[in-house]
Image 1 (cartoon, rainbow, N blue to C red):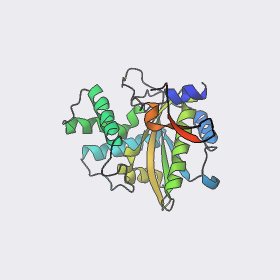
Image 2: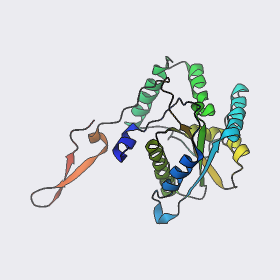
Image 3: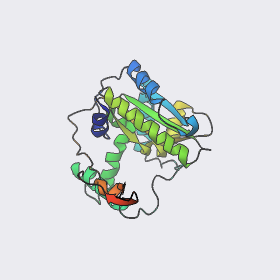
Image 4: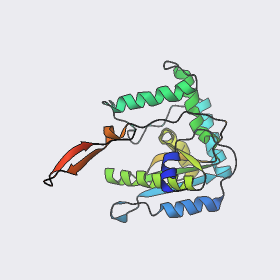
Length: 236
């Protein structure tokens, strides 16, 4: 699989088979992902990988919290600004409408949406999960480094024929995750990531992307060598 295919075939999969992911495959992916870029090579990510009994225990504990309607843990970071200005708010709303619409869940059916979201705590049936932490003393640039690391992991998983689903949702059950992982003090759980082989029987429409001119501006030189803005063409 070439890098273009890995990028364009990667998506958040929310349905996995129980086929185990070989330990050597995960080690190969994470050893290569260590080459992801980071400012001054400080490599601010801390990854934990769960399979087997430890992952089953985490799913069990999270499921018990859902069943007990236990309140979420207080978030240690803000997932989204309180107000998403245009066009970001519209994109988020379109995503929600597409995802829940495919499940036959109406916009105002909050209980059904909560039931669908609860699948997060089972990792959508995945047999492996990664949990990524960052030191709470790190700044915005290091959080960006962690994002590049996670994207590298997900693309390498595609090269292995695997799929994934990054899940910031786990941040609201961070205490439950910590009970199983026992991370050092001073780390913040950024996200979980479900990993496995896709269950082709679970169908979700793929979320589209903004047309290139909405997000990219080409600045070309004119005949005198002066830069000038030029809209992107030919992609959507």
